Length: 126
Image 1 (cartoon, rainbow, N blue to C red):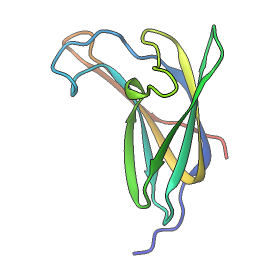
Image 2 (cartoon, rainbow, N blue to C red):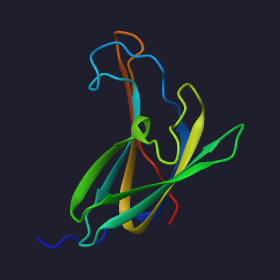
Image 3 (tube, rainbow, N blue to C red):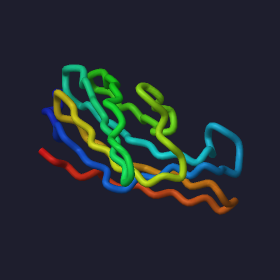
């Protein structure tokens, strides 16, 4: 089955925050933020992520590749090149791809035994 290109090349996540504490076994229940990237097309997606803060210059770009017809669940906690994303700090992210992709944003907040999960589509810029 041939799937047409779907998605956009620019996305924004306006609300980001990685809790520093977690309750439960890692890595499954570690508090985290994830960008779920879907590349339904036939070419690899070369993705750059720039992270913005309220009180300092942006970090990045962080670079990842999503193979054709694949998904990548990228934890912001694991981004470390060029620098780690600080915990307990407000941030936002702009995600740019050279081919159309779909981006969903998810946060697991496991600071207390009743865990909280938030998930939403990112804002599609173009």
